[in-house]
Image (cartoon, rainbow over all chains, first blue to last red):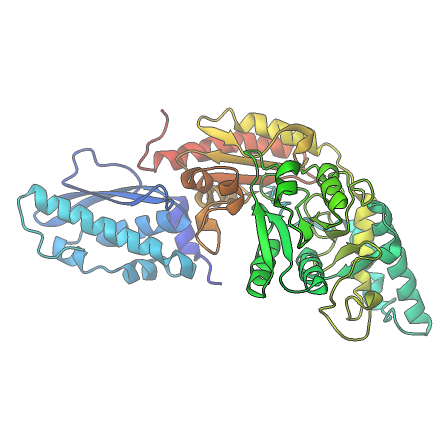
Length: 131
Length: 380
């Protein structure tokens, strides 16, 4: 069985992006308590660029490390670039994780989509490209 | 920092004295217990001595003990052996809090044309003798109930349950793998016909266990071959393993496990939004602690504790292969989210007060850290 890579465990143990952005431009929340994973993502956008990103995650090692990896990938990217990121990119950033945990990376990608959707909605933009 | 190993419900370290007893059987006394020559005799004597020790530990006779490869094999043989000896269409009663090897064997038996009832348990994990009696049908042939639960530590009243089985003339089996040497068990006063035991939970080696089969109990043979183990389990005997198991049984003691367990429970419950799963006192395995933490996912907790050199386990969905939360925690009425946040700490006789104090010092910080990075907030 494939295990978590050292990098994934490092992300899990010392998440630099864990936290909240009080005046976030977009917030996305996915998952539910019953399933055991809830992810809330906050983005700050300036000139179409995601200049800051934070997450709050209730979940397992896979969920927390996926949240961290996704934030790392997204920070500094434009909205268009960020939307091109796939859950496979998150898995690649983590190097390896147990196969049954790949859904955690999917959840991470969904949270990003929701946060961008929320950002567009707040700006009165149409969500052309959703999740 | 020295590791604090609190996953003794998964497996234990082999006691060095056990290992020392085993070693000669690999490179010096390596005979096949079935051979006629001196090497064979030496191995055979050691094997029979070990059998005697296991038998005495549960009030049985040596010829009622067979060695197996461990608890899983013993449980498989007990259930499938008894079922097929009785014939398809017969009925088995077990519980909803059994180990997977019992539940999976039962599921398979259902596919083979047997009927199985799964008894509910109360909120502490106890099976009621009345419920058991009600579940018995004319075609019931076997009752299988775990003695000490591996997750929440509930120790069943085998004597009471055994009486029900005896009065109806039904075989009574218990999986005693977690409770062996930790809770009293006597095949006669408990009216047991079949008992599964293993070595690696009591500082013996992995890969060896035993099955008690009361004289006269009929089991269909599953492993055919040279007729070893009274014809019930062919295959050259694992003499070193049997010797190690016997030595582990001889050395077994509860020591201060119960006091340390209670100190740990008391200390952890000081953390807000926690609950103890399973009973307290003497009806709980002396080495088992199982706590649910609200707003925390168990695997993440285990992961952070690992960073503090504390080895534990969880009943969360994420820590299982099926992504389903523990069936035992569900059976005692926990909601999914409560089961996700469960932590199991299991002690051994080598666990020290310093180790327990270290856990109690580190755990609150780890819990708070995880709560802080969750969307449901930290300190409330």
